[in-house]
Length: 130
Image (cartoon, rainbow, N blue to C red):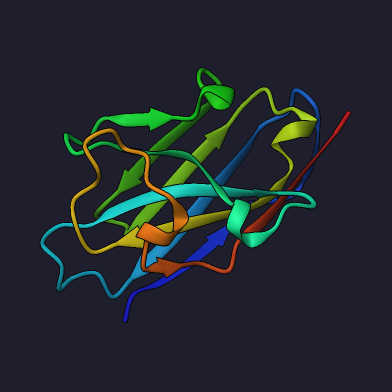
């Protein structure tokens, strides 16, 4: 059973930085897997959860346009951790951040809807004040 646990969310002022981490376990039986960070913006429904950062099928990092140049996704396979460095935060970045896992290679163009992923963490809250 794959388990994911996010941490690092906090209240922060606009322009500040946060580093989110997702500790994962139970993945040793998978030769390939794909992970990404999703955000459920404040007031939005679960089905409106959007991907903000992930990897394409070549392992290249990819981002949604609104976070390009400000967020950096990275993974540490030895530590079983997926990270999201968030800089120059804006109020519109507020929301619950989730890491997601699927037991296959990532899509060619990196983006997949939340329904494509089969395991999720509980999320960590980021609140950016202006």
